Length: 595
Image (cartoon, rainbow, N blue to C red):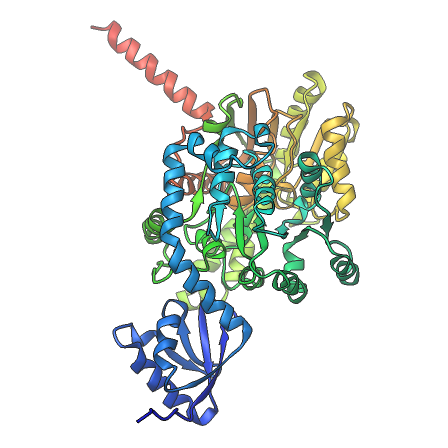
């Protein structure tokens, strides 16, 4: 006798975070559906199946098997996004092991194997060896895409262009959507023209929402936009990808911006990715603050496969080994260091310049610090947690006082220590030696003061106060091409990613971003392909202040990120490490002479 179909009916939709499905029945059938779902789970961890106002939540790792077990008991009404969700995860589960094995083979055999795999591509002779390897890995048959984590300045943009070109030639792709930071939007069309001429119609989605919609309607082959537009125009962009199922390529440039599943940009990109045939994330600093930063970047490529069923601890120290193990066992990524693939690139040297604060500056710093210490000591843990944002803002004020107290106190009148130091450095480097220089600062008041102070040397500025894209682009052009423009003043939050500023070999950090990614990205604006001279970084720090430990924290984050990705790098040469080496050598020499 045929089994009678149950009366429970549930709509199936993906969670907004795309890490689960929701089965939504009538309100009076929620408990029955939950019982059926937990029963169908059998040996799976049933505690992970929960119920909320949205329905019965089924984690993505369990969705396929669980729904198969429910189909005779529940009438499921599938929304298109849910169907796509399950199909994508079935597909990645079926192909992942083969793609991972091919990627491992490419890593092991290198250029020789890569050349045979892309022998049908034209024009690869203009690429470096590691870029050919990347193209081969990015165009593997049946692959979902790749995380390309080559170090900054190693040519990831060019790699993507040639990979897309090869996919088009193989009739595996029709259109590309590139999502990048605002500072990078103008670079993509230039590179596309340089390497592929007018082969593709490139549409840059800028301006008002109406203008962006008009540009989308006109059609194109490659669309370039920013993270904000990916959120505000997600529906329109999803329609673009859905119109070419499986034949669209999604690329996320500087993917360290996509690290939290709670962020709107991450969720929007995860949903867009469901409708793209392949996805690539490009980043030289993918884990600047925490190992957890890597999770969503890998998930954009492989639909969450690498970290499915992986419980990543919140504590940074505990998370590192877990994340590292997951990407070693299942991560679809390549990483090349500039020291390996661009051996002729000059070395980087760092020097910390410790400065005593000016008198009034030091007094304001001590007063602010003592007040903060007293207030924190006077509260218990619960009160501290409630007032955490306020305390962090006051801590940030201490760092701003180290830079320019004018941003904290309008009554401040003297010249702060770092501006005095910059007077000497700029007069020496620019005035007497004729060198161009990049000056980085995190604070608007400091940027204002620096920009005014050195007008006589020819200054351009690139930060949040310069919102016009063409004006920003012109600032870079003038610094790179105009011999009268000697100083580039910038905030690493705006100018840290993607720009080429190698007309300078010296960068001065007047103050530092608290975000490791911004700092690490900014280092490579002058140390990249085309630089022929050794580069120097002068980091100005107020002595005996919070700034010194903040800088140490940035350096430690850089080292932790390198270890996580398996980088084999030598520590940068600094004055302190150099002196330590020669002092040790002198000590050995003296010890030998006394024998």
